[in-house]
Image 1 (cartoon, one colour):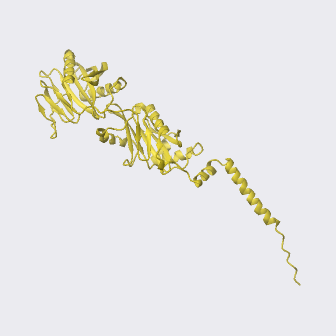
Image 2 (image 1 turned 60 degrees about the vertical axis):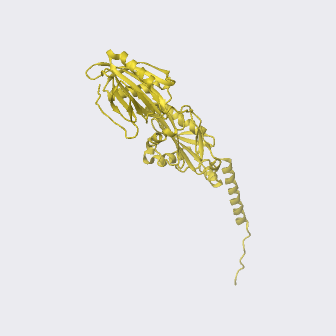
Image 3 (image 1 turned 90 degrees about the vertical axis):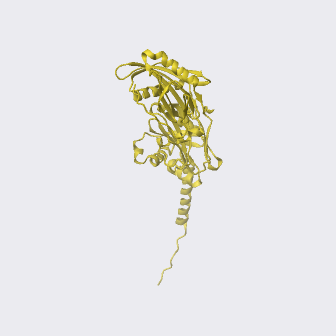
Amino acid sequence: MNIAPLLVLSAAAATEQDGAYELPDAGVRLMLPSWHMSRWSDWDFRGRSGDGGVLVSAWYTPFQTTINAENAEGFREAWKAKLEQDEHASNVSFTHSDVATIEGRPTLRATATMELPGGARAVFEGAAFATDGRTVHVATYAIAQNARRATTALENALRDLAVTKPAAAVDDGGKLEHELFSFDLPEGWRVPLKSEEFDASGLYSRTGAMDTSKCAAAIRPVAPGATDLLLACPGGPALTIVDQYSFEDESMVFRSGLFGKAASTLPPATPVETHSGMGILQKANDGLYVVGLPYSEGTLVAWVAGDKGRDAEAAASAKSIATTWTLDTAAQTHHSFGAVAAHTLAYRPTHPVVLMAAAMMLGILGLFAKLIFARPRMEIPPTY
């Protein structure tokens, strides 16, 4: 395997005593008294058994991911990519995976076979569990002849390690609150934990939001390296009344305000019914959607950024938040008489109100004409 001895010691807290290796950023302490360390930091560890027959590795990925069978495929894909990149492995194939409770923690366990450079067959034994705002991964590797030793080594490591920052209680769904609005979050979405806020802010660049200082965010951790983001921000492009008559024009204003010249390359927007009227659902890219929701002081822009391979899920999430948003009383949408009149004249010229107003105007003009033409003509006496 591709293992270059490397020691990374943190000046902050990475200390070893009697085989105990603290990984404070990951929230765990490894107990490996008979192992030789080759790399160690606040966030990861790498070592080998006394005879070098088994390798062990531990690291974390951002966000506290729920460990369940539905997410298992995402973990397998992430581990496969790591084996191909770090170990230069090929023909990686998972032969087993399941979710079990180990030392009181929901833990994903998986076994894979692979081929190393030079053609040697090897095995991978992996495990993942949650700590506070993190997902910790522990794995062992060995050539095929030492497969059983790799399994036993991982079981012992999971049994002996200590979690120093236990996973926080999280509730899927609930509400995303802002001073102007709130959303009912779809299943799987939640507000970031305090320990996740910094990592969540690193996802904002996946959207087109320019000023995120007044935004509210929610996340959906799916698998390592695959966390979806909802970012809702006031201050979008100014819209007037959005309804079935004005939708095409208003959606173009919305697209142009967000994407500039690139707006012409985007597909048509989709109308979405909201509690206060109609919103605009716009696909910006595979896995990236943006919703425009007009209110009294402007337009709320809600971005949903997910993985390109989960485009349908991102679209469903964007539509869901649009249909469930509610406004603070002070921000309730109220259109002026002038705005309503202008909208009706521009988009509904045959509306009864417009026709009635036109009829009244014609009647008034006719009356003026009649008065003018019915006025007695003034006779000018002749002059001699």
